[in-house]
Length: 110
Image (cartoon, rainbow, N blue to C red; front, side):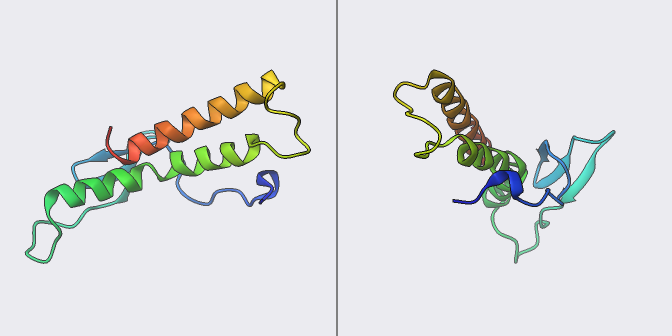
C-alpha cells in the first residue's frame, strides 16, 4: 500500500470543480477557471446526456482523489491498531468512507 504522506503534491488545478452544462470549471480561485469544455453538438459528439455525465465525472476528480487518499491513510493495517476497539480509528475510517461515498455521488450526479 502506498504511503500517502510521501506522495507527490497535486499539480492539477485545486478543487472544488463544478459543472456548467458540459464544461468544468474550478471554484477554488477568484472567479471561474475553466478546466475543460465539453464537445459541441456536432454530429460526431456523443449524446448530451453522455457529455453531461462525463463533465460530472471530471468535476468529481479532485474529490475522488482526496477521498481515496483519506481511505488509504485511515484504512486498517496491523500497525494501526484494532479497528474493533480503537474508536478514534473507527471515526477516521467512517469519515473517510463518507467522503468516498460523497465523491462517488458527485461523479454520478446525485
